[in-house]
Amino acid sequence: MKYLELTNLDTYQKEVVKTDSKDLSAVFLGNESHYLNFWVLYTSLFQKIPNNIRLDNIDGEKACQWLEENFASEIIEKIVSGKKQKPNEKVNVFETYYILSDELMLAFEMKQDIVRLLFKSSDEEKINKLITQISKFKKKKSYRDPELSLLINTNYGLDTKSLKIAKPKLKIEDNYNDDFVEIHKTIHKRLSKNNDKGLVLLHGKPGTGKTSYIRYLIGSLKKKVIFLPPNLASAITNPELLSVLIDEPNSVFVIEDAENIIIDRETEGSSPVSALLNLSDGLLSDCLNIQIICSFNTDLSKVDSALLRKGRLIAQYEFKELETEKAQALSDKLGFQTKINEPMTLTDIYNQEERNFEKNKNRIAIGFGSN
Image: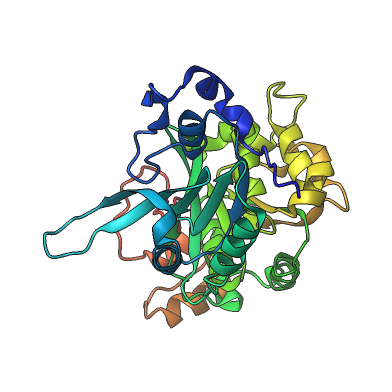
């Protein structure tokens, strides 16, 4: 039987080479949620490159309890990383590591619901038993509370942090112009499809409802949604991003304020359009099945034409001010007594009683940011 899986190992080769059993400094990652580098820890303890089996969506607390009850005689050491905020509260465990006999190590990443088995010459029957039994503690995914996986930059590289997000009470027919209804149906149908790929481009003036619509989508889809914030736009070309996406196949990747990513390559020679093309319709897309949503304020004419080709593009839509009649109807529904004589942005309609602090602009943010 071959277990060897070298995914992500290259990242740590330099650390592995310089680390021996007398020097454990490279083992520490220095983050409360990621306390130890388990690959380096294993190598420093046993001076061997381990096989690596990863199990996802595991209830770590229950699996740890089972392990301690059934393998108590084989557990040599237990290492826990956690946080206790109040004296009367139990420790919030982030990670638990078990060193077992037969050069076997188990790493439980509680916040990510991941269990890793690292071993070299362990008994095959024992490994199979552990995999089978721990897999019984797989969590059932609940979509009642929409979640957003925010891409973050840490001292150990790119990672994601799960955040709860409230689904807005948004009725498409009331908040957007009539021509968007069919576009929305197309977008929702495609993004609800498993093992699919493609690109959605949402653009238009600030305040016209792009971000609010994305929030609505996140709450409606039964898929993992990964969010790339504007300050990490350069991560689109970071090799570490690929590792994150490989761990989250069949998900939706949202890029907000994507101007610097989707701009024409002839205009910006360093534009990461090529990376986006590979993710949305290249060879990688067939493996990852990642669907991408880009929102931006720039004109569509500045977007690289390769992103607009048939087969790659799921949909593109320009958000505009809500037409006068619809703006009036929405304003009335919200309880305002305003007489509306021209098209208005959603920001202006929803915030009619708010003071305007910007000169010559009516921009009051809704959604994640300002779109």
